[in-house]
Image (tube, rainbow, N blue to C red; front, side, top):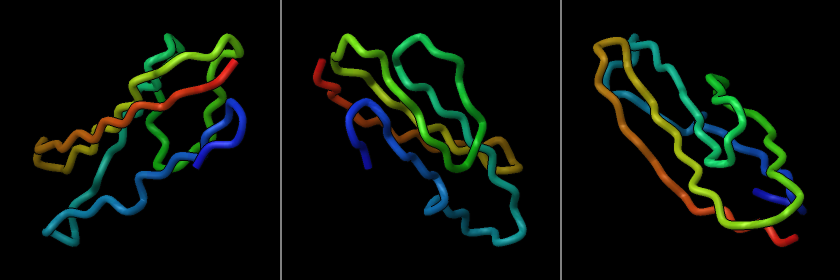
Length: 76
């Protein structure tokens, strides 16, 4: 969910058929800011506004991954 330029993001709903498997998370915000490996976080986009491609890659302990991409539009 987003309010203004800040979005609260979570990968907590990600799952793996192997319940003992460990998942890792990699967020790319599409705005040039550093990537994050947090499961849940708050991210503030630049003040100029624009549309950003937000990507979450979830990888399991076997190296298999799944990617979810969303467009986020921030008004100036």
